[in-house]
Image 1 (tube, protein in one colour):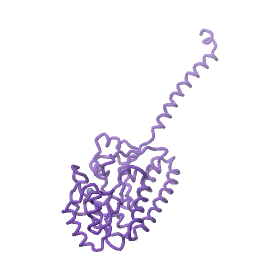
Image 2 (tube, protein in one colour):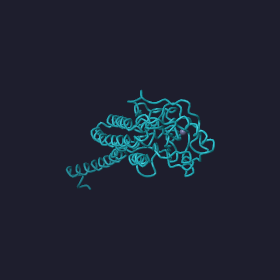
Image 3 (cartoon, protein in one colour):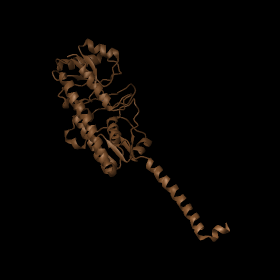
Image 4 (cartoon, protein in one colour):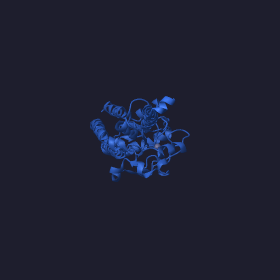
Length: 310
Ligand SMILES: [Zn+2]
């Protein structure tokens, strides 16, 4: 030890190596925090899917709505709201979607209203009664703006572009890759649009009765008249419901098809068949599907229409 201290060169060597050791520790700590990816919160599955496609490798998507709930009417816990408030970006659907977001404070600079570019073109809903989506669940109303904006794939494409824009602003070094991914995503959405236009052409000749007021943008985009009920696929149709249906059929002569949000009870299909209506499922896919993704769900919707008897 005395030797090494008496040798200034060796002593310096030891000190340097100690410093560089400390630097290494700091560097690896920095790399750890780099690995903690930015969080992008989304209020519904379509937005989570778009954000995932655009930011897959550099961000994590925060979308925690339980699978049995409709994200439009979901009530997050205080903890869940805090996690969303802390996200790097918060993707809102706009159009009065996610009612919880209207009564909570969200950081302005992180919030993206994805329907912003077609705000003027949103559809107002009036006179929709309070109802529940499931037995014993809280009643809600669809009053306000129609919110299933993404079922018009041109609008979905605009929402994806809004997300890409926000990602590029928030993460400038990723902007180029985000924009190139947006192009692929928009190509997929435009293919869906073309396929939906073709598949829905047989629905234009007469009104199509829908089970729930969530098809407004789809109907407008593909020129379909859609008188609406407030039915749930998992709740059995009652005789009262059948009386309401009969009135709607009288007001909308020629209706042949009936659209559900999810696979209905077999007895519901049977009752509608007796009333002269063929059931078909068009899933709005507001929540994450059990299997597949946004694209495969939308393709399944299109296939279901293609398979309908003329
Ligand atoms: Zn409802």
